[in-house]
Image (cartoon, rainbow, N blue to C red):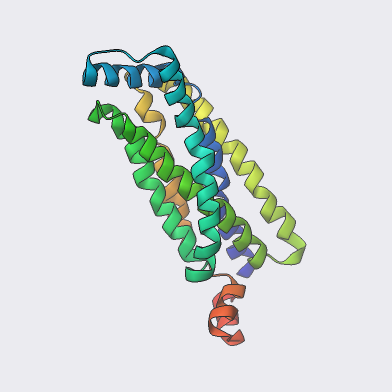
Length: 223
């Protein structure tokens, strides 16, 4: 049972971390022209004037760098959350945070001219990914038996590539002026799957020992 649980844990944690990282890093690539056009059209609707090309480039660049900047903040926050509320609750909290991030990214087109919602959504999404990217690695390493620990931790890279592949595939039908918001929404399915899988995994033994100092409680959790 413990071996099954660690495999479920690894898949769920990597789906909420590595997969999300690959997804969010690649999701803007294919609908680039549609997104910049949306930002410019929103500005015209608001002010009556188009954005200068240089300013539009800056806004597009900032939309892209929201990901690494917010991810870094999330990674620092993860250290506090992991020790404060545990690995499992940290994963649940961060995974739930993905949902408003994804929904805001998709809904901004229908709430024009407020293109800033795209930035807010990307920041929330990236912050959650930063938290989960640290938490997933710590959680897996602390729970996996030594003989399979490397294999379980290495799943992060596979899921990262898989997340990027999914966005590239979605970009084919969704990279147009009407459908580009839809490229964000399929990610909700993967978030829900990971949340459901977290119900079947156990907390890190290290966290339980640190919090309760009870070895029997640790054994009851993982058996």
